[in-house]
Structures are given as C-alpha cells and as structure tokens.
Length: 469
Image (tube, rainbow, N blue to C red; front, side, top):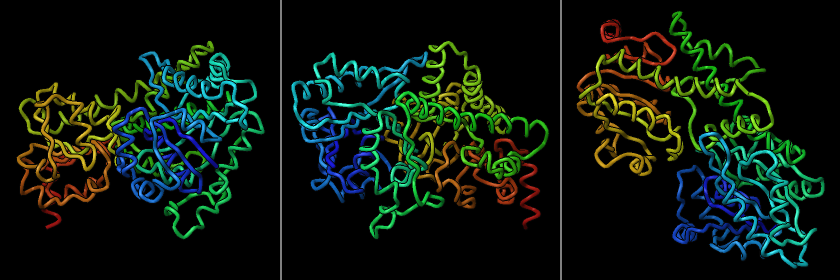
C-alpha cells in the first residue's frame, strides 16, 4: 500500500521505517528542509536501535522524504498524522499543528474524485479528536465520502521502538469497521507473524507474541486506551517508588519485594523498578492530558494527582540520599552517569536525570556528567558553564567525591571498580537505578547508597573489603 506519514519525530520516523520494512511504499513528511535532506541521505536524527539499518535498507526504494504534504497526500491511500501534541501546565493538548496538517490534507481532497483516503491519528490526542478532525476536514472543503478518520495509537518505548512496532503486544484501531479493516491489512505481516519468519527480519525480542491481537473499537475508546495505558504504567512506577520508601523505613529490601510482587502474573514485573521516577515525552504529558480529560468530563481523578506527586517527591527523596552520603554538597565534585531519561535513547525531554542535576547545582555542587548518547542534546538544556560534559565515563569520575548513576544504561552496570577507585577522590557510589547489589559494591571498597535498601557507608564497605580479602 501507499502510505504517508506526516511528522518525522520518534513516532513518525519509526513508523515510516517499519511500514517500509513490512513491504509498503512510504513517503514521510517534515517541514524542516534540513532534516528532510539529512533523512534522505540516510542519517538518523535520533538514537534508536535498528533504525539506521532500516533507513539504509529502504530509503530511495520503499521510503522517501519530502517537505510537501500535498505531494504525500496525492501519492497515498492512508495518511498517518504523527506530529507533536504538547500539553500546557493544566494538561490541555495543543492541537494546532494537527489542525494545520488536517487543513492541508483537506485542501488536497477538495473536489477530489479519487478513492477514499483514510486519515489516521497516530499522535497522542485527547478523546473526541477524531470527531474534531472530521469537522475540520469538512469545514476546510474536503468532499464528504472522500475521507474517513481512524485512531491508531502508538505504544512505542524509546530505545526499543523499532522492535515494539514490529513485535507489538497489540494493535488498536478506532473507527468504523470498513476503515479499521483497511488498517488491519496494512499491519497484516505483523498480525499474522509472517514478518517474524523472514530471514532478514529485525530480531524478535524475548516474549513477543506469535500472533498479535488486533483490537477494533470506537474512536473514543482508542483515544482513551493510549492515555489510560500510560497512566497505569506511570502508576506502577510511582507505586514501587513509594514502596521503596517504606522499605527503607522498615529495613526491607525493595528488590526482594519487587521480585515477590512482580512474580504475580496479575501484576507483572515490567515497570516495577524503583528509581528517580518516570520521565520522557509521553508519561508526564499523557498523565496531565488524561487528568484534564477526566476533569472536562466532570470526574476528579485524584489517583493521577497522587501518581504525579509521588513522582516529583522521588527526586527529593534521592537528594536526601546524596546528603546522607556526602553531608554537604557545596563545592563537591560529583560525577553523574546518565543524562537521557532512560537507557537506550538520547531523549532528554522531561528527563529525571536533568531535573536532578539542576537540584545538585542549586546545592552548589560541581557536576561532571557522561552519557553514551545524550550529551549533545543535554548540552542545550544547560548554560555553557553550568556543568562539564565528558566523552568518557572514567574521565567524568576523575577526582570525584562521588559517582551518581541517574540513567540505566547497560554499560553503567559493568563498571570497573578498580579503575574507579584509582581515579576518584572518594570511593562513593550513589545508585539511582539500583543497578548493583549492595554487598557486591561494598566488597570492592565502595560506600554504596541505593533506593529502597539499607545503605552501606564507608565503614561498612571497608569491612566488606576485609572480608573479601
């Protein structure tokens, strides 16, 4: 099928590459001419596993890029809208870019006698947007019957967005039955598992479904599914962080509690990991949007207020941990590992790591930071002299009073403790992602502070070294 993707951000670009991967002809639109030129050369603007390979495989053949919405609409049967829908402080979604795109699509359909085109909401939008898009299309002159509107929410996690797209837990489509069936055809190689059987397929992750459920619903239900799903996952993160705080107070180990709770199939272990709280471009925005939707409908969704409050409080709790380890922070040299909001991505939007670094700076600390992928984007988030960014992990650790892990990159779980001890001023590790077992770190001569577990300060760490010796 001929498909247009309007928007080349995380969602749009991954969708464009993956639709090309399963056999469709795809034209991807962005209004940034420089970006389109870079994409046309095969340059990936985001750090996403497998994306560069798919761009290299399909560009100029099944996948091309343009700045012209009109060109894309004329060439396509299905038009996906994947532009940004940022929220204000109250959680109201800004649909102005969506409206501009819809009007541009309608302009091309004015008076058209071509086969009906399906306009697909891929962006995260508030409930009722599908009906609003229909109205805008009609008011902009699109002929009745020349289009239909379907909501097809995305459930991609940055860092593994390509595999999430190609091996999803489910595919949701909201709209009338005929249009949903056309969407089902687009996803057929994923739904029936035939893509996974290809010799050149992107590797299938553990636990992927052999056959993918296709859930057809009303547009309003599909619009709510995305917000409700992200709200529930954010709630799991806030819940385990609240449990971690109780664990510290009573002398329990949150990792043991997490294992016991997560092994219940009704609960599951995913997103049940203590840390600095959720971040990124989706969870904070989608929670506010869902709360706003509920308020507009007359329902006071106070559970969401508490999820948001716990998430913000978690950074304060972790700052207390840093004070426990170092007492005062003014003038201390702190080596920070991680700037992205999570491992596997260079995205620093709503990053807990960035927010926490700002707290350290306010305390008067000198921050030296390292991230495998996000340094360039993080540089834009800070003033020129606010922090020092290093190209190597062990360079950041030189002469540091403490090493603080803020992002769960895999390499941060494989530290060379002997090398760290030789370059650091003090052997102190403060782990905001619980990437290590306390006894393991203490046995290597480090004081160790983590979340939801008993701290092992320097005296105890020294004892562990003696025992290991």
